[in-house]
Figure 1 (cartoon, rainbow, N blue to C red):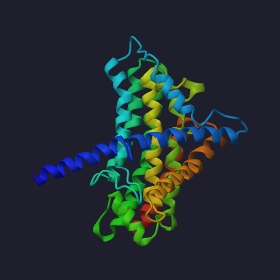
Figure 2: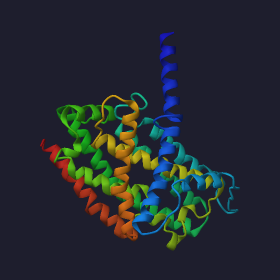
Figure 3: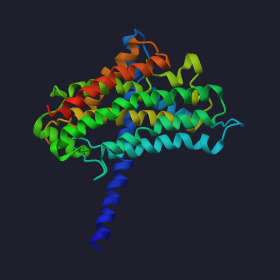
Figure 4: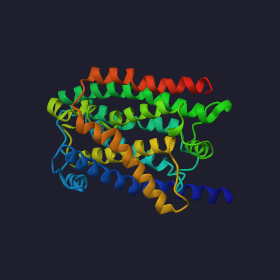
Length: 326
């Protein structure tokens, strides 16, 4: 009987995390808000008025009410399942994210390796979408997305290993996000640790690549391949891709906050939620909004070379310093 109650309690927590907080409505609402703020601030930096902050929400609502068209030559099962794959993957990922001082996420599931694999799903969804759409632009976008994903995942893996080895110390690597938060509470935040600073800067470079903003919006370049994998999508399917992007932005920003500067402000839950959102916003502005408002677009070989030369090198420096026990 006790095992049954424990299972039901775990199931209730899992459903709440997935549908309400820290995933579900919280991640979705914050992600859509950040998308609106990002577009508005970018416009202001470029001396434009820009759309209203709620424009991403308006777009999603409008798309949800339109018919989803499917090309006659498309591979229908793959074409229709691609947007759902990315959305479900990011919804689960958001539910596992601990919010410092507020929530531990889904108990025993917040592991950096789990995040590493789940973060691949939106890119995989785009590749499936492009390859199944029967559009030459979609196929080209698929090729670019695959190349870019390999490039930015290499430094991410080294960042994760550096953090895990630093926290684990002599007890091998520690991948639990809650243990990483607890370690920083006792030993100071990684953003103030000179050994982990190269990894932090590498993560800043990782963010625009994984979120697909300029100069790394190569797979969906509107002026070159007219949205690439998303060209043939419309209606609720396209809305799901936009929702996936909104949730993913919160997941990757929140992950950066958790592993590099998870400090809290007292014990007040509302204050810590707002503090977490503010740190995510600052991270977005520094790594995405400011960068894309001031840059053009890389070619795919330039983006691939960039990630292998700069972020990978920075992450490798932290990994080596941790291995040498600095």
